[in-house]
Image: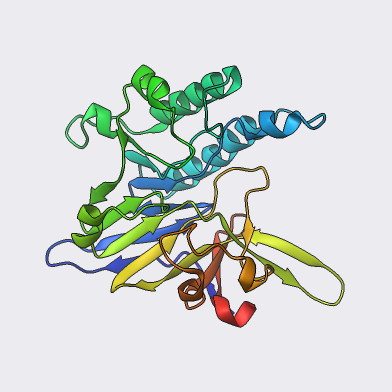
Length: 270
């Protein structure tokens, strides 16, 4: 296992190298763009129907974001743009009252935290909202906040997509893919206990550098890649098939230590 103490990866192009850093369930691009996804706001309301469940989801999301923004500011950096990789809310068929109010509060918080610089970003590009498979009815919220819904987004040589569909125009013109959707996690165990950790996947696919980020939701979202029989993995779920993901490296970010732990290729953990 390699311990990587906040080492940024630089991807070269002809003029300006792209810098990518792991953060707590998120990525930092070029020291100014925060990337996260799969918040599934409203999910706790869904599971509360089966019993009593405390309302903690939004509070924990905002607490995590507060820590991220603070740590970045302490390094003398400013977030000028946030890219959300889909599945901002959970309900497929509508917008519940909880989803409406908490999603608006979440977007308001981001809007307050993002550095305002008229010369850097257009006002409607400060928050980029990419459609996920759960975002079939997200238009009213996006319209309320003046945020455009997109199928994908490009920054320099990076293509940002949710991960359930391949958007060829974005894919072909990019060297780096950043995806969500999978909610990757691994289970680590010894003779006494086992624990599940959200993780990043990092590897190559179709000559592209690929990063798959974990769910930003604090409630349960982690697909245990090394604990489920291969026959049960759905190869149609992500644009990259599971047997190809086995060659990706597993990276866990410890937010208490601000360190990245590289566990090597996924296939060695199965």
